[in-house]
Length: 313
Ligand SMILES: NC(=O)c1ccc[n+]([C@@H]2O[C@H](COP(=O)([O-])OP(=O)(O)OC[C@H]3O[C@@H](n4cnc5c(N)ncnc54)[C@H](OP(=O)(O)O)[C@@H]3O)[C@@H](O)[C@H]2O)c1
Image (cartoon, rainbow, N blue to C red; front, side, top):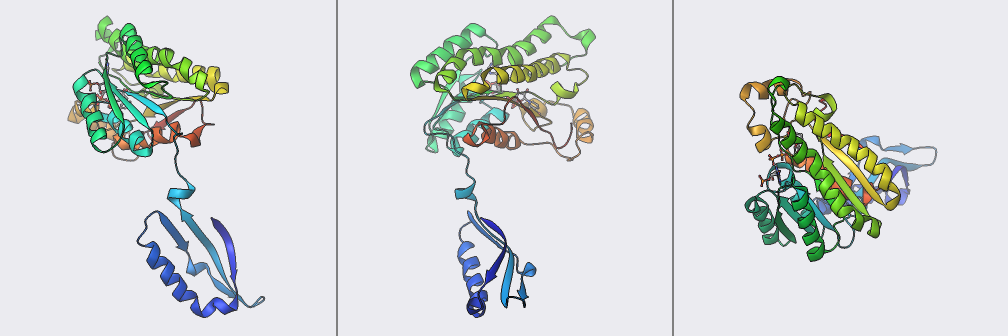
């Protein structure tokens, strides 16, 4: 609640400072409730003989601006074993998504994430599949659908890099990166979309990259895959927007994870020079945006690519 000005009757003037003190003291114990009381903006209006308190704002962030995720939704996060995907799985579980399915190449990594979430009282499951294997993805998705019912939230996050200059890039490097980053999103979406359409609700996030927007020498395969994801996002959003489904892409910049840990110190220093924020981002920076985009509150944001890049692009 916010209002520009409040006229306080004279009878309350004497006790006003005590009242403010009490309110602020009691609110200090509850970080969810915030009362902003800007006394420097207040003055006595001699025309009406009353104290005017400007900019009285009472906000209860937990109650007034919550993110909600429906009554009982299931989210599937690919590449949830480490890095950005792990943080996304954690953010969705902690944010209130009823069931989070963590998927990665190795059962060990997604299993550890799911176990950790379950030990904190959340409801998580682990599945391992190579996302570049269309047949394997279809079988795994069918198994997930039969064991858990419809998946309403799909995060196509798994990805790899196999960098090389064009003249040295092998067919295998090209194909592996396209298969894992781009074709995987098609495989998962085609396996799960029908159920979203039936439920008239769905949220799909495709993890692109700033490299898919700006390009980067030595990453023709990765840039092509990520730019492909952006095109896929726009086209699919137009196809399914009328069915209550949103499809958005996120373009992270330089985010601290295993993927960027393997970059040489020289390349890291060069990359940092191109980031106006001056620092790398964290997986949390990306996970926070994912949580918002898959919440009930973001149903009208559709077909967009949003960068999380410290003003890089
Ligand atoms: N980090 C960045 O700066 C950055 C910037 C822009 C975009 N991105 C994108 O963000 C996403 C996540 O990146 P990240 O940095 O978190 O990567 P990461 O730390 O290397 O983690 C990658 C995750 O993807 C899974 N994965 C990779 N290939 C797979 C396959 N064939 N089948 C199944 N799972 C597979 C891995 O499974 P295992 O755990 O089993 O190995 C792992 O859980 C990627 O799409 C990446 O391109 C990252």
